[in-house]
Structure formats: C-alpha cells, structure tokens
Image (cartoon, rainbow, N blue to C red):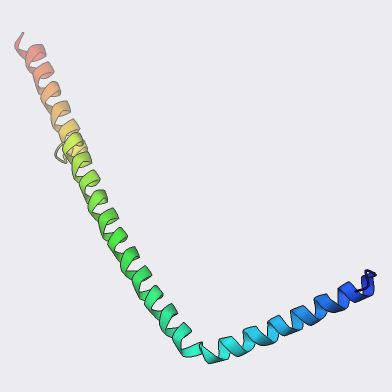
Length: 99
C-alpha cells in the first residue's frame, strides 16, 4: 500500500462513490416505509403542537381573567368625571348662593 497523496485520494473517491450508490439503492427500496414513517411523525408532531396550543390558550385565558379581576369592573371614566364635576359645581354654587 502506497502512502502518497494520490492513492489516498483515489480511495476516498471510491469510498464516497460506493457510499452514494448504496444510499441511493437503500433509499429507493425503503421509500414507502420512509414516507409512512414521516407521515406518522408529522401527525404526532401536529397532535403535540395542538395539545400545547390548547394548554397555552387555557393559561392565557386564566391570566386575562385574573387581570380583569385585579383591575375591577369596567367603568366609564369620562362619564364618572363629568358627573363628579357637575356635583362639585352644584355644591359650590349652593355655597355661593346660599351662604
């Protein structure tokens, strides 16, 4: 066996060629099984993602619910401010006129 660079390179090319041919032959023979395996893995991945999305949706709903409870019931701040201003004006007017 020679140790020069040309013989090593030729063995490398022969090995790569045989590996590529073997890979193509095995891929052609197992094509149907590979597709079925990929299809099955794809379905299980989608099921897992749907399950995780449902859990995330539930936790987001809980967070929103707790946030609404923390903030309190919705109120119309403009209406409340206007009413309080009217009441303050009326009290001031009573004091000025009556007192």
